[in-house]
Length: 285
Image 1 (tube, rainbow, N blue to C red):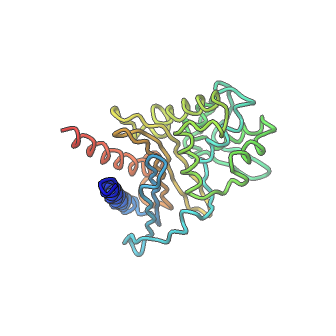
Image 2: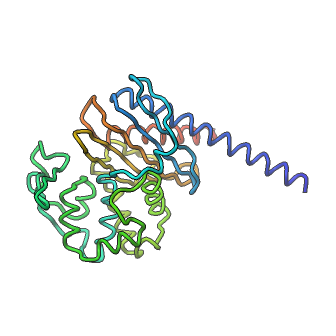
């Protein structure tokens, strides 16, 4: 009995050390990216085997990044096109991944308000399939698809999304449920279709900058804009060393470089994955 207690204590200590290391490396990687893109703030949520492994919230204080409060992880905000995955999941009873929409030049009037795709200044995407709407992060495309399904609001509510404003922790948990193929969210058929779409985001879409040969990733990039300030984001899931990870990164109001969830938030995820992979390789050698 005493030996079991000692082994349990050692396991707790090892797990705690691993979490502290992941917290530290996530903070270091995020701070580096925020400094490079001169962002107002940024956060990381890293989930390992369904447990929170790291939570980092950094806010700029005259260019020096300091830790913000814990409330940011639970505060509801506009998650922009990161929510497109949930919206697509809510419509796949009505449409097929190969159905098409014409997003034109990337500018669309909805209820008298102008909606713009992230590439509107480059002419838009034109005709897209539903799966390309996710891969290429078209806000207009997902709006057009949602208009084809009367049950979208009810389906989103069943998933736990009664509003398009959700917290970072809620969105990270949602993608972690997808990573676990949680069919309480949707049917097995729809879950498989969503998985295919999220892998294509990384293989050929807005997340292709974080593609890694030795670690298959699936996920979604996102962006939102309010009062001229942009948030860029990325949420992915992947396996390293036998563990399932889900990682969410949000970068707020970057002022250096072209605002891109795949590049900016994706850089943070890619470095975290590379760190985890290097640790796995060290164990094997």
